[in-house]
Image (cartoon, rainbow, N blue to C red; front, side, top):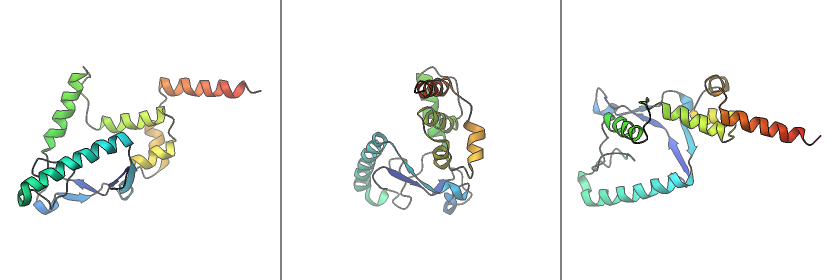
Length: 161
């Protein structure tokens, strides 16, 4: 892991038929990519890795070093699939949000990137879509924030004449 880049190369199968099938290839070839992360997230991740290294030292051979997971149980073994869903459900309840599928976080991230002014091509690459058209079809609906910013930019441009 480089300073602010995380590499996505494998997927975790929460219910493999055989223990050797715990990790598998990503859904598509385009899903194998390096993702640049916000510095604040990387700082948190580095803190987590320090804690994890302390656990490894404390547990020694009892720690599942072979898996090399970032988010795992205290002994390095995979978290149950339900853990992520339960934490997400709890977070939604804390903010009085309606129940949402976990995949909605991907959609929210893409829309927020676009609202922040990210280029659609960048969003396509970040999401691992094979082509631009998929991303444009799914995420090109215009939010109020994007609409207001576009009108302001156009107004600014027209005022120069």
